[in-house]
Image 1 (cartoon, protein in one colour):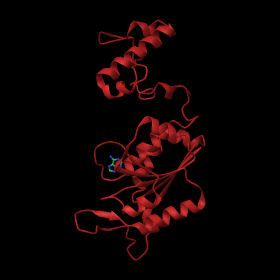
Image 2: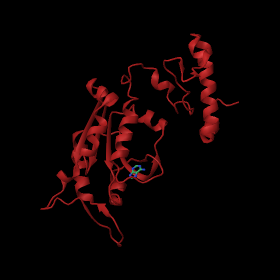
Image 3: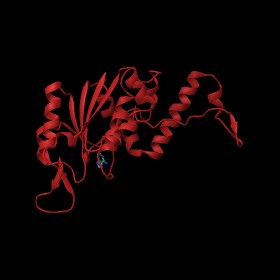
Image 4: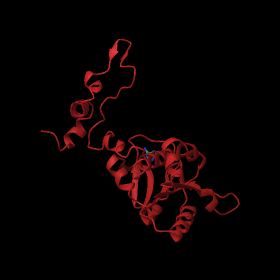
Length: 231
Ligand code: ADE
C-alpha cells in the first residue's frame, strides 16, 4: 500500500484526475491512498494568507514558509515518510525508473509548488526529492503531482489486473513500446501485421522486440544509447 499526502493551495485541481480508471481501482483495492491537504487551512490571520511578495523585488508571489511547515509538521508527527517531494520545474525530470522506485515506498508526501515557488528554506529543511515532469512551466505543481501519483500508482504491485502488463510499457527496458492493433484485421485496406495473427508466441515476441528497438533507435536515440541490450 502506498499513501500519498499532497499539500496544495488548490486541492480541487487534484480531485478529479485521481478519481477514475486505474487510480480509483487502486484505491478501491486498498493499494493506494491519496490525501489532499489544503494549505490555506494551515495559514493564520484574518486573510489566511499563503503567499507573499519576494524579497529583492520581482514579479510573482512566493509561498510562505509557516503554513507549509505547520502542515508538514503535523503530517510528520502522524507517520514516517519515505520521501518528501516538491514538484518544481527545476527538479530532476521524472522517469520510469524513479516511478518504479517510488511504487515500492509506503508513505510519500508531495508539496505542490505554486506561483513563483516556495520559500527556499522549506526546500532546505524538509524536501528530500525535487521532481519536474518536463522542461516546460506549468502554472502550478498540482498537475505535476497528479502525473506523479498516476505514474507511480499504476506500478504499485497488484494495481494492474494483468500483473505483467507494466513490464511491457514504454521505458521499462529503456525501450519504447511496440505498435498495437485490435480488430478488424483489415481496416480501410490496411492490414494488421501477419505475425500477430499467427498465434506463434515466440515469433510475436521477436517481432515486438524488433519493432521496439527500431522505434527507439529512430525516435529516441538518447534512450537507445542507454540500452544495454544493443549490439
Ligand atoms: N511546476 C511548474 N512546472 C512544473 C513542471 N514542469 N514540473 C513539475 N512541477 C512544475
